[in-house]
Amino acid sequence: MSVKPDTASALFAGPFALATLSAPDGPRFPALVTPEGSALDLRSALGDERLTMLDVLDGWDTLLPRLRALATDPGADRTPVTDLRVHAPVAPRQVFQSGANYRRHVIDLHVAHRAPGDDRPEAERRAEAAQIMDRRAAEDLPYVFIGLPSAITGPYDDVVLPAWAEKPDWELEVAVVIGRPAYQVSVEEAAAHIAGYTIANDLTDRATVFRRDMPQIGTDWLRSKNAPGFTPLGPWIVPAESIADPDDLHLTLKLNGETMQDESTKDMIFKVARMVSYASQSARLLPGDLVLTGSPAGNGMHWGRLLRDGDVMEGSVTGLGVQRTRCVGESA
Image (cartoon, rainbow, N blue to C red):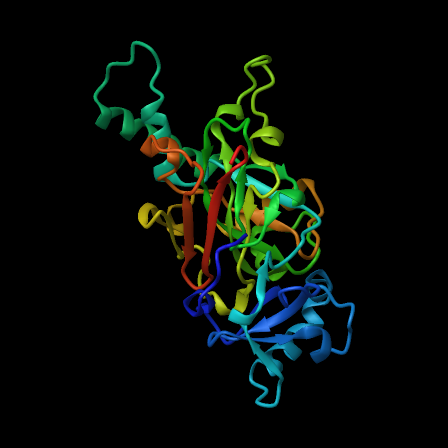
């Protein structure tokens, strides 16, 4: 089961975006999608019946001019996206996730988790947290960890909430899609290694983030973030050249129609290029890899309302489209 995309979901910045699609009972294929909602099968357009989205991204520098030309080709054979199934736009080799990267979100957490005996007014504690964030942005490093590609699912697929997940929560994020191998690149060089951007909802079970049996170990991202389907991705990869400023995009997540997250990437402590550069200092980033850039304030823990069977999440980001996913309890 899945939520059916509509024509409005195809809206994105620029003349085209990329997607992985399929006929209802057919194999997946990489596609070029227009803002009007039509799709061009890149296997036939580029003359390779075995082509995947990873292949497209592996050859990004060479293929980008051809994709630009195909987007405006009046003779191309196109199909309405609404007649096709939309999958996660890419199956990455590696997923890099990040946390504590939105200023207001981290300040809220700092204020909410005050130390025992700290009876200072909230305004004073909030000012202290703001100073810590300023110092962190200037002197510290991003917080990045590894996710599993097997957690990725499509932008309209149902999300199964495991029976063991006591506090499943949403985390809408901008995801960077790598288009050129990157290893130990500078902040100034990072943009040249980005193919485009997409939407990710990096679900987390809050009850299993911290190891209760071995608190000295700290966080357990394997269990809390990597259940199958815990990372709805897409619908589209929008080329970086179509996004004027990735550090000025608006994210909105609605739960059953009610706005829960509503923030700009301007609030990020570490900007997109800094995140890509930092991840590349330790790991070799490959075409198709994802760098998730963190989630803003407004998670379920903030509202005291976690995900449950039947919930519908709608996540949108300026210029990147809309994803809609329905939660299904495993026991249901």
